[in-house]
Length: 278
Ligand SMILES: *[C@@H]1O[C@H](CO)[C@@H](O)[C@H](O)[C@H]1NC(C)=O
Image 1 (tube, rainbow, N blue to C red):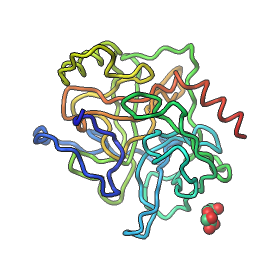
Image 2 (cartoon, rainbow, N blue to C red; image 1 turned 90 degrees about the vertical axis):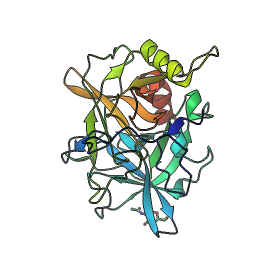
Image 3 (cartoon, rainbow, N blue to C red; image 1 turned 90 degrees about the horizontal axis):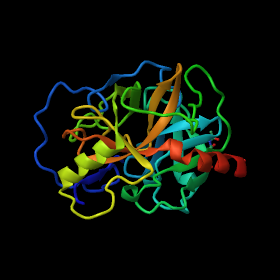
Image 4 (cartoon, rainbow, N blue to C red; image 1 turned 135 degrees about the horizontal axis):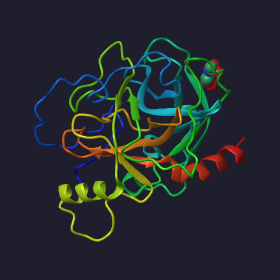
């Protein structure tokens, strides 16, 4: 399983697993294969920060999305532990420029999904409650969560956004502007099959957990630092958050999609937390 790669930014000295030489570089600008996002196009996109003493600053480790004026959705693997101290995190919101000097928001509560063990087993989602609600604006507002009755498939228009690396060995450069890319959803069975083939998986049981979905392709998808960020699809004119970036193999270096937490399958749990922890 050495190949499977979490898409958190390994800024805390974590070693990057060894991979074969990357595919020949092509004209790749962006998330991987993306471009600069206009201000206000993805107003729910946030950056999760932790304090790094070495740099004496709050550094981006993951993406996230505003799902309510007081709540951020991200990946569980972005949070170090279930009893994480909320004061160890800050949220950047409302600006496509990552270090543009905006006031960071405080977090008052961290809720990691209780069934989360490892991203490769699913349940890779967490909620962060903001110390005070954001004032929504053109540049900052919550994304819509999917109704359970909706069906999403390869025919839907879906976009991914984030401040992650633009290529496996290449971080996003100043001025750290949010990147976005349109990526196709992949059918569950086709995704499972291509992963099994790639990993030479012989065992029974699934490679892609039941509560996850696949999207992206060669040259277009998330990379380290995009974890926790939103995958949105357009339904009747509204952007709906369908996925949370979780893991992949390399960064869109192979003909393989990346793997996301399927938000639709967790909407009930999310709503329940928001109600219960008001
Ligand atoms: C966030 O929390 C810190 C530490 O408790 C505090 O000093 C700071 O004023 C808070 N920031 C905001 C915007 O409330």
